[in-house]
Structures are given as C-alpha cells and as structure tokens.
Image 1 (cartoon, rainbow, N blue to C red):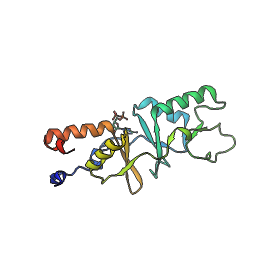
Image 2 (cartoon, rainbow, N blue to C red; image 1 turned 30 degrees about the horizontal axis):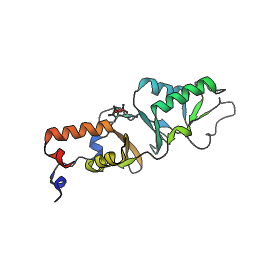
Image 3 (tube, rainbow, N blue to C red; image 1 turned 135 degrees about the vertical axis):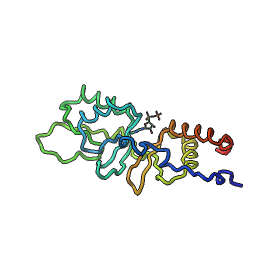
Image 4 (cartoon, rainbow, N blue to C red; image 1 turned 90 degrees about the horizontal axis):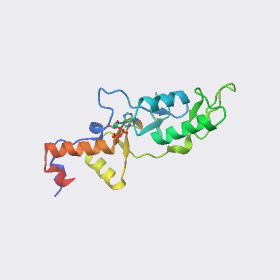
Length: 177
Ligand code: ADP
C-alpha cells in the first residue's frame, strides 16, 4: 500500500524552486569573471544565505555553492590584508587564475570556500523525494538543474512552506510524509 501515490497532483521540484516564473533570475556568481566590486554589490543588494557559482552566465553550468557568510569574511579579509586587492580585482574559484593582461590588478582566489558538490536534483524530481532527501541528509538548500544547467534553488524554508501548504490543502497528506 503506497498512500503517497493516491495524490493526483504530483508537485515537482520545479514547482517549489525559486525563482518563480516571473521573478528576477537566480543570483549567481561566475567562476572567474566577477570583480571584488561585483561581488560586494551582490552581498549588499541581496540577503540570500548562499550563491550558486557557475561557469558563465551564458552557460549556467553549475560549479559549486558559496555561503554568503564565507564570502563576506573572505572579501573583507582580502581587502584589509591582501596586497594589491582592489575593487577591480577579479575573483576566481577555479584551480588556476584566468588569463588576464599583465597590467591587471592582483586576483583573489576563493576556491577554498567553494562547496564543489552541492546537492542537486532535476526539475522533474517529485517533491516527495526532495522532502525525503532534505530530511535524511539534513540539507539547508538544494540546487535544481535541467540538462546540466542551473535552473533554481530550494531552501529548507521553501520545503517547510511547501509542507505547510500541503497540510492546508489536505490535512491527511501530512500523515504520510
Ligand atoms: P531562507 O529560505 O531560509 O529564507 P534564503 O535567505 O537563502 O533562505 O532564501 C530566501 C528565498 O530566496 C528562498 O525562497 C530561496 O529559494 C531564494 N533564494 C535563495 N538563494 C537565492 C539566490 N542565490 N538567488 C535567488 N533566490 C535565492
């Protein structure tokens, strides 16, 4: 007896992830093309707990995930203590620094704060499975991809809101979760 399968409306990861259809795109950081100033702007203009790192905006290939608090500390430290780090310094998360003209300012390597294997699911994953994964692995967030491209993010709070909604629509469903 599989009670869960009786629900006709199967919610998928893509229905719960952010951004929603008309929202502004996900705030991401590129792996080797943003400056210290670009990243400081993101830190100042958003409050998300973390940011996916992608190869490039065009590709949206996921490289990893960086926590906001680690980013703040690292950039502040580098500004204070690392010689040559200025607003126009490139930040890179790759193993090797990107090729830039010799006249460019010093670059800032932040690979050590990058989580290289953030948990991901595809957009078609049923939310039942996503909820299970969050519970079993104690996740804080999970990234959503489609054909290897980053589409969105689901946080623990998003999952909890979704569960609360389910319980509202159908109080019995919570029993099976
Ligand atoms: P919480 O969900 O605990 O409030 P966040 O502050 O990280 O955690 O996220 C707030 C909302 O913004 C959530 O709905 C989440 O899905 C979404 N979100 C999280 N990170 C990003 C991001 N980098 N870009 C766009 N939206 C995000």
